[in-house]
Image (tube, rainbow, N blue to C red; front, side, top):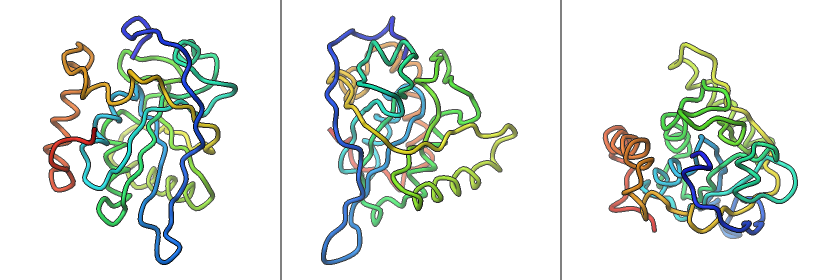
Length: 206
């Protein structure tokens, strides 16, 4: 979303990068991934509707120095608007989550999603380690067949993650009346319900 249609607030606090969580007595039961698909309001809203997702937060990552809304919107910090998603792979397969990610935006559009233009709106997958990078690369290769143009989604190492301002968290759920939500996000939610009905939860994660 462009700066003109959002509220200016003070800077956001820094949080540690997302981590893989494992039980000391068994296989990993939850996992966290960080993905960027343009305005974070969109992916934030979709992720909250998926069964198995236990936490969602809109963040800034992929840039240098502290991140806050106005600085990121200037396009000079290198950060992307991203969404940190924690989920249970036994309930929501990673392949399904990544398919939702690719289908909710245009991964062939470089640094642009609709009217949102700039590197802060790039399509990106932030990997925590080599294994995750390989997994993301395989996902890109798998979905490339569905597109005539090359996918430009970047694979970037996950560095410092900054939580976005409070008003950006679960924005669509709290402000469905906003024009951007009605015109841009509502159709994506409808598409999610039609295509991924078996993977949806009752209601949305608040």
